[in-house]
Length: 270
Image 1 (cartoon, rainbow, N blue to C red):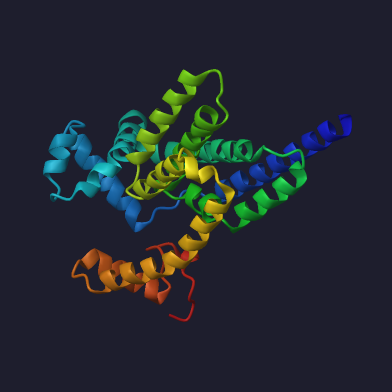
Image 2 (image 1 turned 30 degrees about the horizontal axis):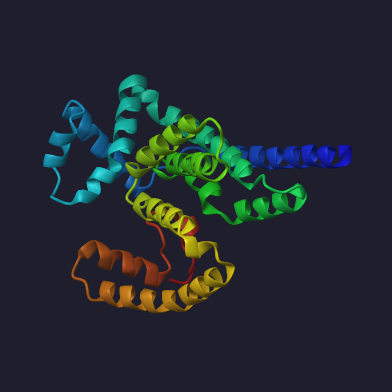
């Protein structure tokens, strides 16, 4: 028992050391602004000009509902600009590093389900090395770092309340609701991830989902179904007359995954 405890402590320090390395790497890169960053700053300045009135801000935009899913992030930038004035971008960068540390801690806690923690740590470190979320986004003035922290925290509270049945139920339920709402209004991409969490919750509570054989049939069917769904969606996108969607498709086909972030350009000869 003492050997296992000692091993877990060593592995915990191993993951902590690697987390410090990731934070240090992002710190060494300094703050980077992309074209999206300037858009967010412009929107935040419009929000400030409208005395933080979201109703007035949205009137100045088109009728698209998509802007609503940036509300919390724009308020976040606006408050930083108001409170810290000229140094707000520096504060934003340091907060990103703090969110990175919190995300790594939550990432570790969510994986802490096995006595064989060395294998778990090696797997986690491998995932982190391959992940853009932890090596690129934290040093950009973008939504990703705060979103990752909020969404992973909502998953943590979800696990504690719905899976672990923690006796402090109300606290974890309120935490799950709060972090889910905040992450929803950080970026439109949150819709898909939160919908996935809701889908998982519904499946988990269906009686047939507890049958191992039915679960296998479900996932095998899903594997065969997804390519057809992807093809259908791709064809629908190719036929669209929406400029933004056509622009994104053009980026993807050329290998230019995310605008103004060269490290995500996967086809070097285009």
